[in-house]
Image: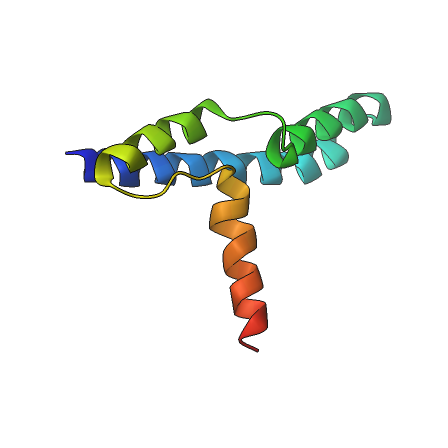
Length: 91
């Protein structure tokens, strides 16, 4: 049961980040300058801030505890940056 919730939560988290990343260029195209600059700044701050912790990351850590996996500090760092660094080292 926890494994299904874990996979579902990670999938939703990935889709949320994809939505944030796709909304940034759409704002630039469709909105005036004074609207898209603050909104894109806020979106990028939410995605890459080391201070803010997403509630989905907190839930993921709770599920990781129940499944016996290590906790993570940042979803983006764990699922995107670390695999990219490992891939880059293998080149």
